[in-house]
Image 1: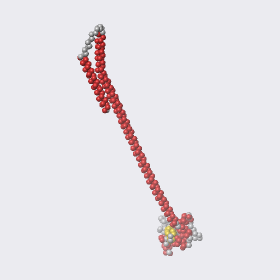
Image 2: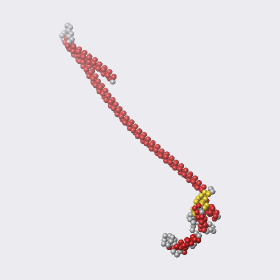
Image 3: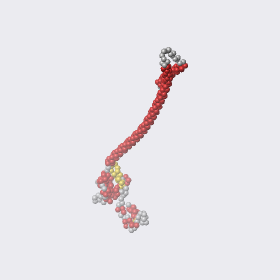
Image 4: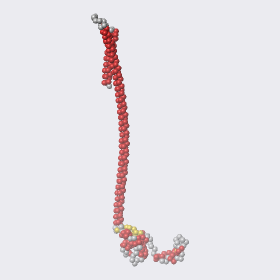
Length: 319
Ligand code: SF4
């Protein structure tokens, strides 16, 4: 900018100088027109008049030439000024063009920068989005892992609980095994038929069962230790145990497991005394003519039967 100003000042100085020169020339031309230089007195020559004429003509020609030169000289600065003005215009035009070009370039750069900023913004947005997505994924992964971990812990706890339960059960089983009695082992070995059909050689089992039940009944709800009972009947443990199992299956007694002198055994308690055939030997029902029509809820019933009443009364008196 400073260089341009210096250039303009120089040019202006030059133009002013030319203008001054032009003014001087104009002034000179004007004075020559006013006071034309006196023509040179022709020297008296002895030559003929024919030689004088070309000399005047030559002078006029020179004056004309001088005039033309002066005119040209006057014209020259004007042309130069014009040319310079033209050049200046061209230069201004070029500068304007250059400036416009630069402005265009600048606008282009601004546009480019705006585009880049937009791109950058889009990239940042995209990266932010990507990061958010990744963070979300990470969070989901952490959640999943936590869930898995929790499930694993839960599973392990469950496993441990199950193992503890298993151990407890095993301990219980061992304890139970320690409590196991001979009868229990026997019960496992024998079939139901072998239990209910238990028979001692040369023994009336009905009578024996009735007798055993009568003795157990004497002890009422306190019951009697099976070992004591078998001693009375001189039975082995195996036979006694089988007989107790038989009576239990028949519903006559209940067996209660107890610890006696650090040994697990059974106490037998009466549940139902079996009816002996002897007790109903004199019953009127055995010879009753209307027995077929007799039922608990019928017209002929033991509830209202006089024969039964009489028989029971006699039996009680006899006892
Ligand atoms: S209850 Fe009386 S009627 Fe019935 S069968 Fe016995 S004796 Fe006969």
